[in-house]
Image (tube, rainbow, N blue to C red):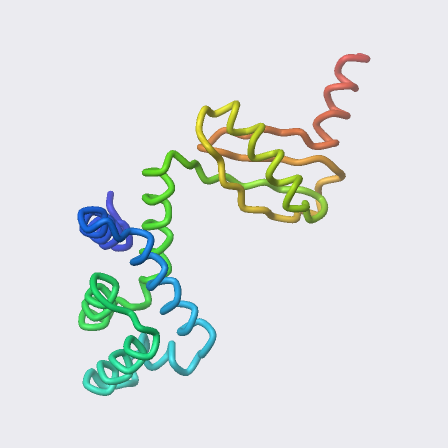
Length: 176
């Protein structure tokens, strides 16, 4: 079943792709959301029920102008504001990013490790996983103190467990 975010994201992706402006639209939406996220009062004014529609539209118009948001991104944000769905923007952006990555042959994944990995380590791991899944892999990193060492990566529903705990378990099973 399609979510509200996926419906808007698909429509924006298809329209932006027709105009060859997918990256530009995504960048403008990110800039808008970052501005909202960094100013709680602004976010509340645009998404909360306490501000009347005209005032909300004026605030949105000023913000879009100051951020130089135009074209499809502007139309989407105005539509979301009109329908009271600006709070859905993070989900829409997540779906849009996933569609962009998919169209570029990139799979999103997550890697958990006991300590923060360096950019080089993430890159090496990403390249190794890409060979296993047959596509480029972009990894989001998560520090998991419950891991003793090593990493656990998940890409496209497949888990690759190279944690110290798993290695110890395998060694123990071999001895028994």
